[in-house]
Length: 361
Ligand code: NAD
Image 1 (cartoon, rainbow, N blue to C red):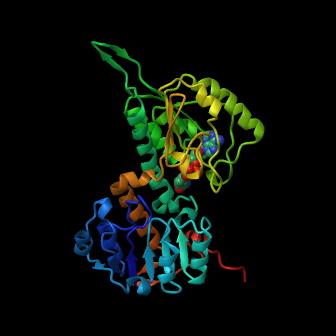
Image 2 (cartoon, rainbow, N blue to C red):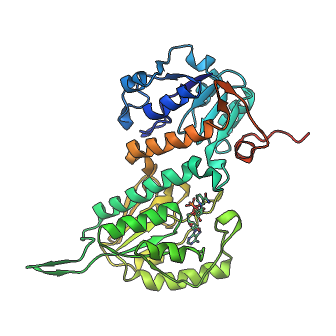
Image 3 (cartoon, rainbow, N blue to C red):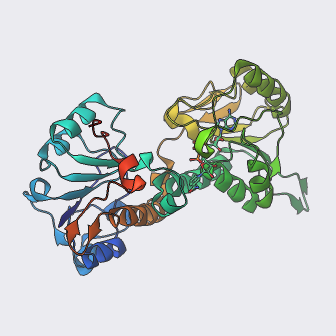
């Protein structure tokens, strides 16, 4: 089975979908692995390391002959059109986000597995790219905030007086939010966090954070949040606006699957914050949790810095790639066995992730 690891083409993307370690395991499972030159370079994996692991360099014909293509971000329509008809494509493909991409996947009759569609079940955890990449994003978001703030995070007792610790608020306690809580705690800040899923209280507290109770609970289906009603949103905002006056740093991570990020921090809340405060909005990718966030930019609003960094996982490309590549390996292992491809459509991990869903008979 020919497996091709592509070099990412998206601007600023440093991650790679396979590492020498996972290449070795793919080969052990019977794959003939080709790696595009420079694929792992910006994640610290040189071509030679892949060859040492048993891969071969990709050549001009590799795309057209590959039976399985591995990527991080969605490939261009041009690449999709160069793939063999019926080939399998694995990555964070977001087929619905771009019509040309979706059309190309259909036109080539590719068997596409957008990994973001994996059900969040226990069995899928080892393949869960949303979780593995969110962990890195939450970590980096806090480091960016620590870099931007004109304050220390920790409490210091010095000959020049005592410095009080920064008060950091993490919005949303999913995978990224909890990693943000843990990271801000390690830097010595006083950390608060809230989420609309009540079960997060215990998780936040176990990491040394304080659960900020805004009196709103909105657990939805499949362990995700649902959208808040207008009344719930107003109540959350009233309590929050009051509270933010004493906060130095906010890291936003709240999301609702398949929807724009919930707008939680309004312009007037920002205007009530002290000058020198910092907001890092990790939700910028889907529009941001703060009304003033500009995705990909950092702005100043009355002395408050609001950063909307994109693709934070790519900043930690080494470990993000290691985790992503293992996720991909575990997923591919569902259908690559003993040198052959076989898809068990009774397996919900394959059936529910596949896109487009096959037409009902
Ligand atoms: P996500 O990125 O979709 O959302 C991030 C967080 O934002 C969530 O915790 C959500 O509740 C919160 N949120 C949404 N609207 C909000 C609002 N208005 N105010 C405050 N917070 C709001 O979520 P995620 O990080 O991908 O994880 C979602 C859930 O899935 C978590 O419970 C996670 O533990 C669970 N999960 C389970 C598995 C598994 O294998 N069982 C794997 C991964 C994740």
